[in-house]
Amino acid sequence: MRAAKTLVALLPGSIERITRIIHWSSDRYSYEAHFTLFVFLADVEDLGLPDEITSNVRDLLGAYLVNVSVPTAGAAWMAGHALGDHFENPEAAESLHRLALDARFAVGRSSAVTGLSEWLQEHSTHDSRRYRRTLASIAKRDKSARVRASARVGLERIQAKAHK
Image (cartoon, rainbow, N blue to C red; front, side):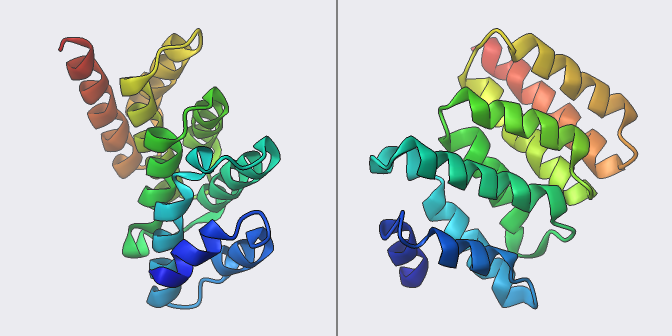
């Protein structure tokens, strides 16, 4: 935990090391390291770093979701949650939107769907309607029951939040 916090505190100088750690996925402990890094990377927009570094972190989280194939240690969920619940830049939502459709494996799509629904619960942009339509389509058509269920739950939460 301390190592992850230190690596994030050392940004931008530590971005290459963080990237290497995130690409290492040999056992359960590597996914626990990913989860922990994602917890601290979630707050990167608040660190006063150059926009390029924030964008690199957003891209790193997205690249993780594109290829992650297992739900081990909740790392995929945390990557989606970081983008959806912590990032304010609308580019995070656009990234989640693409990932919800295009991530290679169900765990990545499901995590992106969850992140996108979290983002929509807190933000309203000119793209919000398009994102909700995509979630509705995923809820009906994704090949994975898990992803379809995530989209249905996400839509229900968005609706519930809108009525508060």
